[in-house]
Length: 468
Image (cartoon, rainbow, N blue to C red; front, top):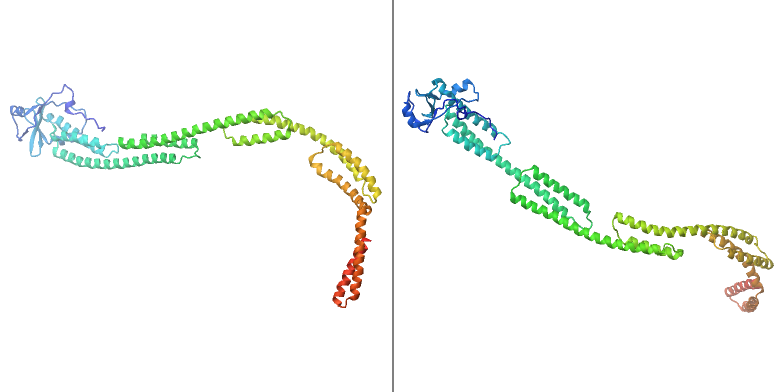
């Protein structure tokens, strides 16, 4: 406790006369006790001038409770008795009381200061007990002159107030401790909750940052709040440390598994790159394109090796693939140029073919067929055309062929012996059936049946007219 410093007679300069300090023996009040008798009851005491300034009024009020004997012995009224507190033989009587009165005022100042200190939020329970114990010894039989009854009453009130303050502070301390313990426990539980959420999909970097933030919160709390007792602090730290250790272990295992997986992926991709570089100069466009597609599928299934490593490996694979596909595209560009020239040639041949139709007779069809055959021979010699034009131009030529063929087939049916034979045989059958129907119609008497026979006859007559 920071107290106001006061100067007592015990710390005055050595040049001041020293009154004798009496023994703690009370003497009955008397006008003039003999110096010899007083000397038997009290040892010599030294009183020094004090540097603390008090008002003359306060000093005079304190002096009212003391007196000075003829031999310089100073007495103070203590309850119903009086007792010697010192001796100032070489001083005038009116000056002998002053040092002891100031000593009283200094002691009272200590009590006043302690009373003010009790109201401070910075005071500690231990300080209260220690100060009360010290003041109690000082007010028991102080070597002072003043209102001792008021001094002891004030001390008694301070003692009660001090005990109450100690209880208040103890209660506050317990509440603050419980609050600090709860807050520290919550920090631990937050760390444990983070660790409990670890799994296959954990983002270890983000989770590590969260746990580090919780650890910094722990450190800040430890520095800025009430200190926990060793058992509670150790128990909480054990839990917090266990959570951090669990996280570190799990992250280490994940890192090891990731590294193994990346090593495996790297080996697979190195093999793919090797195979790609072996076929990159191939001109077997179809088969090599298929192989590159298979390599790409394997690349996608091979896994990751880390961003930088993946980028470097991909650049090597892409370089091999680009070598092949750029060469294939160059070949296609060259081929496409030739196909466009072929298309122009076939367009010209198509115009010649389309000029052959329509044909109206077998003779014209025969001449058109001969000319078309020559055009088709030239057509086949021209070669490929762009894929987008194949169907259109081939269909157009086929249409010319179909027109000529339709006339040829019609003529063929007319001159085909088998067709003619089949036609004559059918005609005879129809004629026989009509003759038979005439007989039935002539013999039928039922009108309905006769009408059905006549309808059948009419149908067969139409057929006969067609085949004749």
